Length: 252
Ligand code: ADP
Image (cartoon, rainbow, N blue to C red):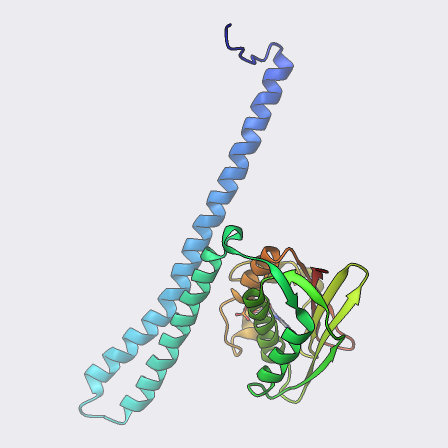
């Protein structure tokens, strides 16, 4: 028995085959381009704190003897920038590590988890956290990752809203879904930026956010962790101002 080969036997079929091959190549090229962009963005982001650190070391070396008063300020700066670099590297590792194969899902009492986290988190931010949580809502997910998602969203809610504002944390049931929402009354996110904020390194209006420190990786990580929990995330406007991030989990 001869092995049978599927050979395209009409020009139309050859054409179609060519097209699907091109599509495949395009997808691969786009992926490669995205990866290249990622490496170049990461290098750029790391280069900035390194330059700042080296500049300050050089300042101490040149002027430290005669002007010791420059030393404490430079050391603070070096400390701050190296911390920024450390956080960035941790985030990059999170992004590259998170892999579906490693994630174990089990029953998680979302109500309890979010209640405890919010109480604990309250101590570290100036805004008031109001919680509204239906008791004992259980989902299928990964506890560590859910905590990580929640902390990242709380970090942002606090960073991008006024110190005297409040953050509303809500856990509720909706048919077969359980929603976790975190709402702030801060600067909000324009409609045409709502998709982009989940892209790696994207920050809305750099000029506005330069005062607010960040790398633009937080939500890219959140988006990845949400998928690993078989969940979904959307962002909407809070009235009269601010944003609401809603994570939708499947009920266990
Ligand atoms: P980072 O905060 O490090 O810049 P993120 O990936 O967490 O990065 O967020 C991306 C961008 O989305 C932020 O730079 C900010 O412009 C915008 N953003 C995120 N969360 C909020 C929020 N709660 N309110 C307003 N803008 C937000």
